[in-house]
Each structure stands twice: as C-alpha cells, then as structure tokens.
Image 1: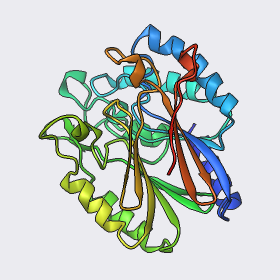
Image 2: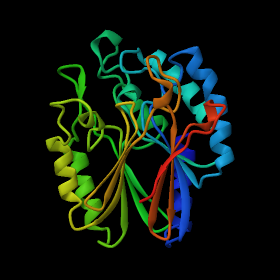
Image 3: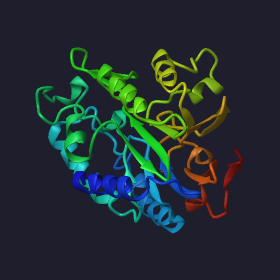
Length: 290
C-alpha cells in the first residue's frame, strides 16, 4: 500500500497542480474497522456508496482500525493486513491520516516493546506512508498532520504536535505562495466540536493556536478534523472547520450522528454535504452553503 500511496502522490503532483474550477472528495472519519461485526458488515455498502459518488479522491480522518494502541505488534500487523485489503476497494485514490487507534502498542498493557522497529508510529510509516505530508489537487494544497505525540516514558499519547513536525509545517508554508488555497487535515481537532455543547471544554488548545498562527498570512480555507465522533460545520474568519462524523455504526453512536462528508470545490467556493443515504432507506443529506 505504501508504494501505491506514493504513486498516487506522484500522479497528483504531476497532473493536478494547475487550478481546476470544480472537484470533489469524500472525507471518511473514524471508521474503527474490525471493532465489531456490525461495523465490518457496514463497510461494504459504504464503499459502494462512495464509489457511486465518483469523487476525485478519498481522504480518511484517522482511526482506520480498532485498535492497535493496546495491541501487540503481531496483532497490530494482522489489523494492518486487513486494513490494506479493505481500503483497496475504493475506486478513487485514498489519502490517509494517522489516528490514535492506528498507533501500535503504545499503551503498556499491549506488552509491546518500544524498541521494536514497528512500535508506535513506525508500522504506519513503514506500511501506509508518512505521518504528515502535503499534496496538491486542483490548485489547492492539502496538508495532513499527525497531532498525537507518542511519549515513550509514560507509554501514552498526547494531543500535541511534535517539534519536528511543526518545523516541517513552517517550512512547507514558507515555500507555499500566499494566494494558494490551503486545506489542513488533522485527526485531533483544531477547533473542538465538543466545546459547542459541553460547558468548560476548551475550543482551542495552545497547540492548535500555534498551528493557526503559522497559517496567518496564507489562504487557509478549510480545516478537516475527526476524533470526537460528531459532525460540525463551523465558519469563522474566512475558514471552514468541518469535523467528520463516524462513517460506520460505532458502539454507543446515535444513528443520526453517523455519516460521511462530501466536499465540493466549485469556482473557489466550498460546499459541505453530510450524507447518510448509504445506511438509511430515506435520504438524509444535510447541506449548508458557504
């Protein structure tokens, strides 16, 4: 899959740098594959539905499997095997983003040795691709981040961006023309959707504020995020913040909170559609214009 990932990156860089008036993609958040039989059985109609939409590409929001964080290296490897097989069923190219459940053996209960060459982020980097990267499509720059830092001494992970990645982001923005429209994608939200309905929940962390400050002076248009299993579509100061809902029926999830997000870009305008038709008999698409 890693070789396929870089082939798609090369094709996109070579063939889609020039601005396009219209394109679309699907954002799939928190699939948690292999967590339950119900989740796995719902994946096939999801793939069929996405393929029928015929997007230009698919962008995942992390937490592809459930779960590697407290699993052994061997068990995590088996999850990755199944992951690569299932995600190959999409017709469109798939750009992936690491989530906390994709990090291997991080918790001490996993019994995994942090010195193992596949521990933590390493299996993802070896088998799927880089934790953070950028690509161009239709004249827009997409920047995918990993904002869960793995900490070896505590055998845990924390919602913050490591210094190496921040330096990379600063350099990436420095070589990006200010007028190029930007899309930031992060499993950990920059603006927390939980703050919209839980008193005292911080909407903006210091880490997120640092990233947004780096983007100041650039044409940031869209932020895609996941992790909290709720849909949010927020517009503030020229930036659209969209939290993707789980695309599959996770345990404890209300059916009305499930869905996928289809993003369209038409003549520089962003359209966001929350689509639920693939698991409901009656269409239930919620759409709000930019």
